[in-house]
Structure formats: C-alpha cells, structure tokens
Image 1 (cartoon, helix red, strand yellow):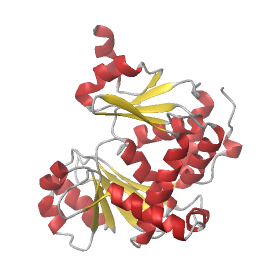
Image 2 (cartoon, one colour):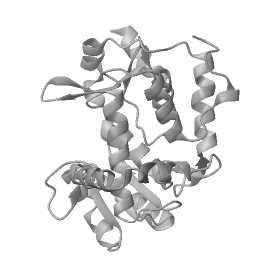
Image 3 (spheres, rainbow, N blue to C red):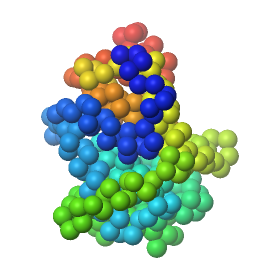
Length: 284
C-alpha cells in the first residue's frame, strides 16, 4: 500500500480529502461507536451526507468563511462530523480540550471570538455556564439532545437537510470556495506553562500531514483503528484524517476508562497512544 498516494496528489482541502476517501473506499462501517452497549456503524455515504447537512445547517445560521467555530467536546463521531461540517463552510475549527479549566476555556473564547460553540453535554454546559453567560452573542449547539435552552446537533442537521432540499447546489458552492492556504484550525496548547497559545494551521498543512503519513504507514480498508486520544489534539486528529483517507474503519472508544474493554471488543489493527499506555498493555 505504501506509495499509493504521493505528495503530488495531496487533496487541496480537508473536505476534498473526505470526498476522495468516500469515492475510493465506500464501506458500511467508516465510523463505529458504542451506544446502549452495542457497536453501531456510520457508512461512508452517511458520513458525507451528515457532514453536508451539518455544513448547510451552519450556513443557515450565518456561519461563513473565516468565522471561528469552537468545539468543547469529548471525542466521538459527532466531533468528526462537526469538524468536517465546520471546514466545509470555510470556517475555522477551534478545538478546546474538554478537560480544560473554565478559566482557560474563557481565555480561548475571548481570544478566538468564535461565532458558535459546539459543546458535548449538559454536564459540560453546567461546568462552564458562567463562561457561556459572558458571551451572550455566541451561538451554542449541543451534541446531547434535550439540553434546556440550546439547539442540539440533530436539529442542526435537520435544518441542513431542509436547506439541501431547497438549494442542492449550495454545498458545492461552499466547498469550492475554500482554498488550500485558507486557515482550517487554530490549535491551542494545553496551557500548562502559561496561557494557552494558538497556532493557525491551513488546509494544506493538515492535508499534507495526513497524506504524507499515508505514504509510510501501511493501512487500508481492511484495517480497524481504535481512537481514544483527544481529537482536540492535532496528533489524533491527523491520525483520524489518515484513517479516513485510507478507508480504515475508525472506532471511537467510549472513554479512557473503557479502552481496555474496547480493545478486546473491536480488535484494532491500528492504534495511537503514548508509550506508557502500550507498556501497561504488555505488562498485563
């Protein structure tokens, strides 16, 4: 498999990376996640459709090219769908670690000034409610349905589906306007040695990293990856882009505490972690 893709045909943008992957590696289990004790699949086609609807839902809310959209959420398929949905509008994803203190969350929001914040759950809303109140003009969309006072992700997707039916060409208009040198993400450091610091990465940066990794890591549609590192970190996010590009099935661990059980359930052939994690696995 090494050499299948060279740096000469790196996708121009991350949304084109997704489209390329779906066209090349259609499969029923592009993404997998566990819900109600069962592993559930999202097909390649469904992934692209949901990204399309998320993007059009954001477009309906007025999110435009160059806007910042923050994401405070644990890793999950919705993280990836929202990520690509943001990018497809030309907006810039600003991930925030779900474990960061409310003071650091406020600092990042104050500096990046997002038009919209994706937040995972009612628990996270309660944890940073005073911060949310400090940004009354910032829209908030929750991954968890039924959080009082906020629009949820399913409603955003439904709005995007309506927009798609009304204007079928709108998604292509949005994605075709994105350039490879447009900013894709502002990645903030964890803030352990001072205030978090943001680094701007373009679509070209991130596509090159994923495609270059694909040249030296032998993986493909027959492989299964277990993802448990935070997608708010650029390392794991790049690995997921690599897996999608190569047609690898991405399984999202339920939590850090469930990784050992999830390992036995999905039997991954591909996984990324810090060295100490693998040492502990082999010790057992």
